[in-house]
Amino acid sequence: MTAKEALAFAVAEHKKWLADNSTGTRLDLTGADLTRADLSWAYLLGANLMWANLSEANLSGAIGLPKETP
Image (cartoon, rainbow, N blue to C red; front, side, top):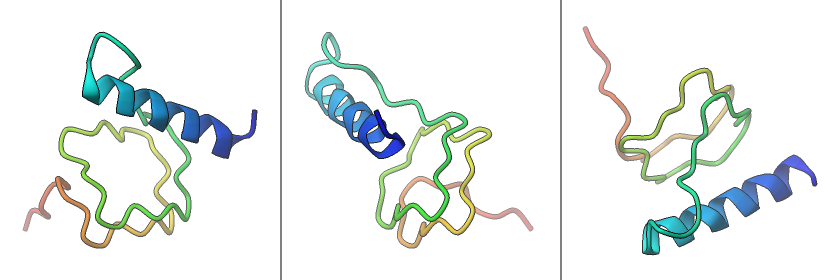
């Protein structure tokens, strides 16, 4: 299974989990390689992206990202 297929499967399982948390699996992107991923307008509130590679990822308009601290 390619990385793209694995992500598509994981997202499909997460959609099942969102509809009924007794089915599917909650999506965990910890350590995921999201290089150049288009996450524009993604809902990321509560997402665990620890150690995720977000190099060149498009996060414009994403919801739930922490605000920059001064």
